[in-house]
Length: 314
Image (cartoon, rainbow, N blue to C red):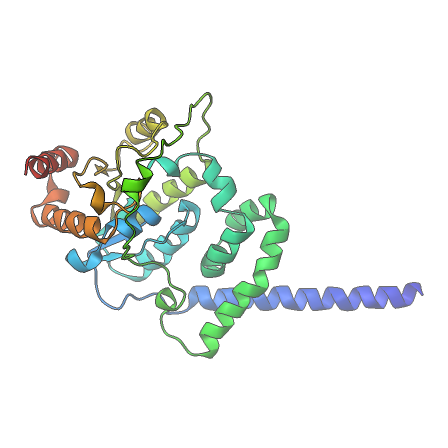
């Protein structure tokens, strides 16, 4: 009986080893493949979550591509930036940096929960090093194990169909044309403001933002942090902690703050997202700033504020 069990155990172990080696080989094939060239040359790339996804209509901004994706944490954004920057000639990278990025809750919810593993690991799992995988393994080993088959299936399908561009095939990001216009009704409801008695920064979100910045500098790409327009009613109770990051940890990285960009209620989808009307106005404004030398200014925020004030007067 023991010999039978030993043989069964040995057989299962061999199968597992074959599967692990097979998946590792598949991931390496994807990682090393020539699948990351953008369909044209862009000077500016925009990365981030739903704020930038809804705000930057790249069809209205010269030489710019928006690769933001709703719900994407900076942990996963790093791998996207890495593959694209290393495989394309890019001048400037704009990364969304806003209040809801800096809190620890984003680590627990948006990195290793099953829903986010299914959504993001299946896109970027092939590009992770041991230390990246260790984070997921530590916090959700079962979820990480379960998502391997889904990820392998996506990658195999891509290879079997002989696709050429994984960025487009797995939908790495784009501008989202939103017709949502709920702010007027939301303003009739009193939003509960968070009273902060203690605050914990996002460990992995900020760590991987650091990695994004370092990666861009190593590849001689200018990197900028950007906060999109949000309505004044949106909860920013952690603003003192946010400003501490801006003027401390990231003081050497240009920060473009558009939170006070003047827009009517009808241009917002909700408290923190623009709809297509707001995106059009903001994108044309942003394009005009770029055309007028925004990135060459000694004080970019002063220039932004001056131009926003002109819009407010009009």
